[in-house]
Image (cartoon, rainbow, N blue to C red; front, top):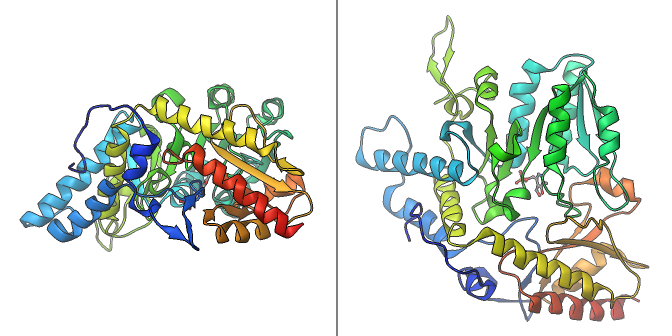
Length: 415
Ligand code: PLP
């Protein structure tokens, strides 16, 4: 299948999907791999791997302004990739999609380019207690520089953003509300359909950290009506080192460049430099060409399936995981929102998450343990961290069974 080729919808089957991911078919520590660390990064299907190999073996060249065939082909594929990814999130135009290294760089881009021109002393940026450090620290950096303030919207014991608190915190000083679509630490799906209109009422812009949202939903930036949507390719079956920022056109037009260098300029002279228009204004230097093309291949791969069926499969895994967790004495699930993505975060009384993680790995079960780059959230629950099993489309109920069989062994050893 060519990277950008459109394919017709076929019924979703986790077993068939598994066959497309070569890495899943191996033993780790003497056991068949059970990969449950998808919130950290997803595995790559063969068409994504093929797209990278194809680029480097057939048409590796720098993009734009090339005077030869390979550069023309690389440019064509690179810009087609932008269109493919922009289409996948229902962007009105592909020029509203800026390539970045990932979510972190996309948020830093907004903090730097929008923040420094649109924020001033006494302005307020609201982030939720659920946020990844990538959606906290860039705002702290820019706020420190400008004399603005970052405030945290509290979350409930079950892991939901407290909308009543948000309503009282929103006033004319709040210039931006930055929240994630789905919490990487707990799985909570945030009610953007309520949050965005609340912010519109007071004039605050909304940035959505879509690092996890992009992995589980068919994102529609127009329906969300957010101002900025940031995501990483590697969370959605694409490579690392590529991601994107989507933004409303008028914001992109008003924003200053993020970094200086090649491609982002119109003219350069020592008496003054003028800048290119979006998206190029924000893409200084040689981009991750293979990464962009392979990310488009990931979206093309996903477009074969009905996303609703994929989501239903993940939800079934989560429900089954919750059910099986009742068998483990002393297991505490952290984050219990009904509206959650397939992320199961937990602790077990009398044990440390890190010990559980190391011993699960000995059984071939890959999970993540610790604070999940959400230290303020861990402080909120007064815990050092959690064990997190995060599911994707290629996981099956058999993986959940392995998790709990291994967990029982591990706890027999630890207790
Ligand atoms: N935001 C959330 C919710 C995440 O889950 C992650 C990664 O785990 C990030 C931001 C940062 O993503 P990246 O490291 O790909 O930039």
